[in-house]
Image (cartoon, rainbow, N blue to C red):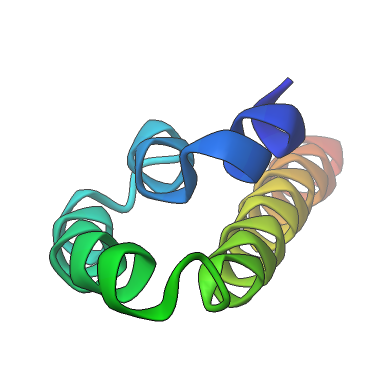
Length: 73
């Protein structure tokens, strides 16, 4: 769901994965970039959001595996 949201509103998608400060910075840059470039830079922000969403999922998996590893000992 978050990947689809990133297609339309990358700053909101970044905000929802927990990167609040980064989402504010991206929003401040995203609005003028959309206005002045006519949307040509929008794919760059989509890719940034997708990479951050993927990275947050990997971090969650790593924490889960580390917790399971500690519980075994």
